[in-house]
Length: 253
Image 1 (cartoon, rainbow, N blue to C red):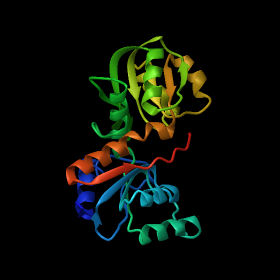
Image 2 (tube, rainbow, N blue to C red):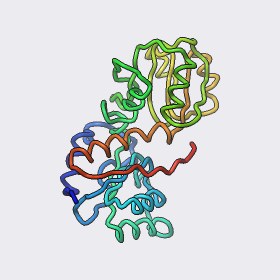
Image 3 (cartoon, rainbow, N blue to C red):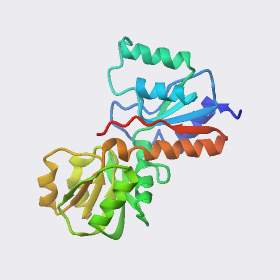
Image 4 (tube, rainbow, N blue to C red):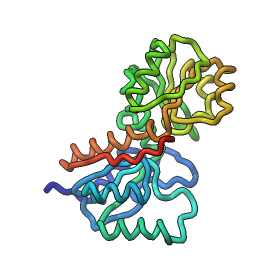
């Protein structure tokens, strides 16, 4: 069975995703969250790092779990109850966890936004949506009917899409930022977009989208962020000749 060094794989991912260069939320921790005994033979990918996805990864025979939303977002102690169950499960089953949040969103080929835009048929993409001075999304100048774009998006995410028809029926400048970027519609409008695709947003964004003349597509936080971990796992599997699996634990949000 092919195997590779965990530390070599982690070093490669850190460099590939530019973890030291791309800023993230103050409490987000990117990189290796939990080590294993030092080798990787099978990779699992999930959107969220949790007890539930760790169990699915173990059932899939993985010894490395790649996630977009990691284990550490602030206070992480005490390790009791479900947290203890998680650590006990990881140690007993030799399962490492690696997380990449905004660096994975931003990657021009493997990122959530690049992969989702590609699935929608958006071409000649350019960087878009700055976070602390670094673009994490992408945009494209492309003419697509709003209903057709909604159909493509529903097919890409495998589920329903909420449309705020605040802009023109013929979309011409389209931006993509996965996850929860709905509260930042003004940045999309200031960029000159007429259409903005993200995962979710607050109730008040409906009226704001109408005021800004912006089409907004909410396709689900979880659903828009399955793309990056899948692409990264597939890339690593090819490079290191490993097997991989996506472990689906949808939130419906």
